[in-house]
Length: 209
Image 1 (cartoon, helix red, strand yellow):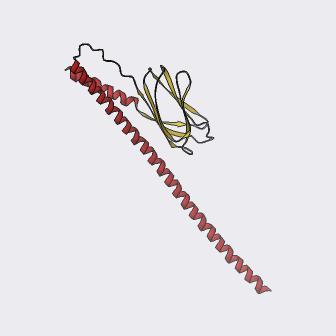
Image 2: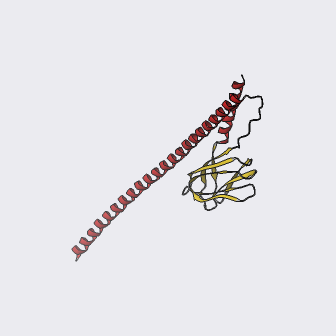
Image 3: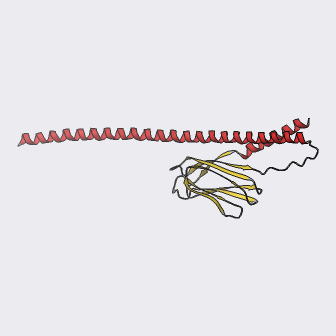
């Protein structure tokens, strides 16, 4: 019975890891900056993954600040990225996406913030040594499984975003090729009509003379 209850607790812990690894879509307007916060303990592992899905040249400025406001990471005009680090201070860490360099184009950002809290010691003195070892192995396996599944989920989301971006680029290129071909046809037709009209006028003048 104890093992069954422990397994249920671990499953709920696994679901908690999934909730900490959710992805979000964010629209950052021109000349704007959007920031988010994660309040963690010392020793926690934090991660930020992001991908620009729409807007302009698909670039944005990114920065991460510690609880004292000191800069941990900064990226300028980036289209995608991943940064992980360990928290050496207790408090709220800030993630900011800035679109202040854009004059009129908003940017759509797909991002995820992951937090892995430091592993707490097992204080249950009633647990036997062998059973405690099995529990630790099960907990480690569930944690690894949760991390792997979260990574796969994020990769699928980023691949969907990239596929949509590539499709949009292909469609835009195709439209430009069609418009350029139409423009060339119009120019060629105009030059042909102009040459025929010029030759006709030239022979009419010669005939009068």
